[in-house]
Image 1 (cartoon, rainbow, N blue to C red):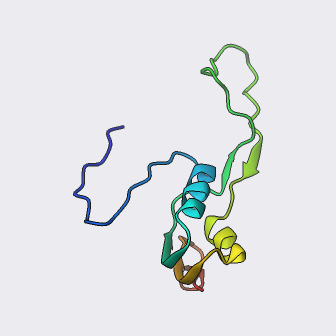
Image 2 (cartoon, rainbow, N blue to C red):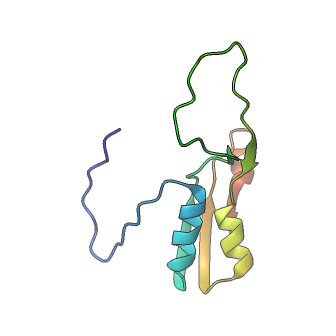
Amino acid sequence: MRALRYRRSPGVKVVRVETAREMLAAAQSALPADIAVFAAAVADWRVATQSSEKIKKGGKALPRLELIENPDILKTIAAERAGVRAGAGDRLCRRDPERARIRR
């Protein structure tokens, strides 16, 4: 996958992350902030144990994958009240998109 090319706006700092835990840590390290804006970005679940190698085909049994929850970044930041004066969040919810909007 190629990285997206975009023009950075003056004063905007980009922090590249690959996991929800890295994104939470990056958000926490960016605080305090006057305003925080959150958007749906990561999966709700991740594998409990990540393989260091490719899992190859071979046997008849499928590999067993155990899933665990990713952190809820907006909920965590809001609960910590970590120096955010105002915040807005929007997460994707296909069942009820209007109820999914959160403003704190």
